[in-house]
Image 1 (cartoon, rainbow, N blue to C red):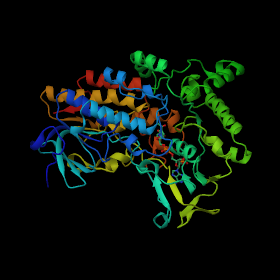
Image 2 (image 1 turned 180 degrees about the vertical axis):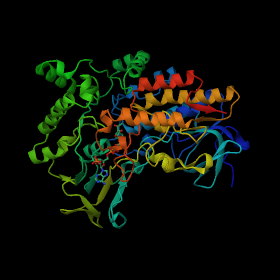
Image 3 (image 1 turned 90 degrees about the vertical axis):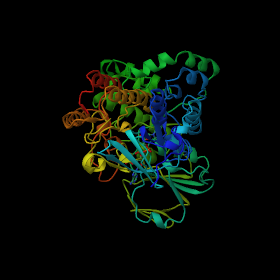
Image 4 (image 1 turned 60 degrees about the vertical axis):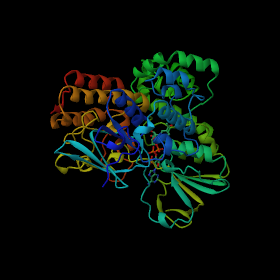
Length: 539
Ligand code: N01
């Protein structure tokens, strides 16, 4: 086998690298930048043929941010902030992909990235303390530290429906939308899945398809995005206020820019409550609930009151009351699943050429050569689109064979849910930072401090004459128990969704992210570092 040298900054000498980063998406790109700034040799392997990961693969129509664009860019470079114009409040995939390419070029990151490089396995060599990365094409590389910047939502999931291989039409998953597009104009198109992706996609393609069949298992609480163009004066203000914008994000639970009203929905009069609900409903994006009474996002009476408000908003928009009731969620709390934002989704179901099929009532039995067979009927289709989500957080790790000390695989270790300290690292896997498992809320705001923390930890190890850093079993047990106990109380564990692995048959039902807020997580990490990496063994 050969040692991979392509594109790295060590030319013909090849590795070992100080740090290997898997992935060149939002997190991977920043990791390359930060680690190189610290004087470390770095190499990234990226399976796509371009940078951007989420924003490279998700080319489906309608794909866009639903957090404000200017809160979703990097903060590390003032020059970048001033140069880059977000044109829309909620920027679309093509522009977002361009942004990440711009970053890769501006900071000269491409020379550290090998594209079209799918990582099959990574194996810890206990003798020399290096991680060996084995690529699908047979090439190998070695590195002292390894960062999995593989994303939380990148292992796309297609349900194992019998007969899909016999389907005579075209099909794809939204997370692998072909770069050349799908020919949908005038066709009979079916979409399975009505999460944040399905809702964006359905709204957009309903404008061009001949007939659309939407297979819905769970109705969602979707809320109007209210996107718009950023005018030049607002653009100027945004650029002048970035430090304040990022400070405001940093102060909130999920690093979104919206701050809760500290009042309870239950302590004001019903009139005041409704006035606030309505006023915020008219605002763009997540403000509707994240600027609302704090307890609309906590399980309980206020949450149910707000859920009913949203249900009525849905009912108002759908003409056929039977269809409307199918679109109204009644089986889970508001915010217990990720709340999608939409731009005309509910009106799609007022179109004559759109059919809503409730597959909880009549489940999908199989895919036939002609379409989808439920227990009720066969729906004939030319194109079938799976907006069926992701094997989240642990999925992208499990799809790589990761072998640590004693040959143990991370997949086996995580069989009953992830076991880590703060999502960052797992005992028995020294010098491996599973950074994709540690994000909370706004991914871009979350990734910068995480990458900074990991980079500083790496420097600490080297500057203090150590070669290895590994989480202790005790620290890991403590964190895993904390996730289970604190997680039980929060909204995100109350429904069956990717947050808890419940969307993947057979996956353990465990909160996959931290139960703590972003500020608490940053404080906890800072404390660990301040105490000389408490909970880690340094050798
Ligand atoms: O995936 P999902 P997604 N038969 O898992 C259905 C982010 N995101 O790609 O709810 C029938 O939410 C499933 O039904 P149910 C965001 O964090 C961000 O939409 O499990 N249906 C559900 O309706 C989001 O949370 C943006 O009953 C099946 C759908 O498929 C995350 O990505 C935009 C099925 C999957 O929904 C994932 O969203 C888009 C089956 N066997 C996404 N299996 C932004 O705006 C699954 N489903 C930035």
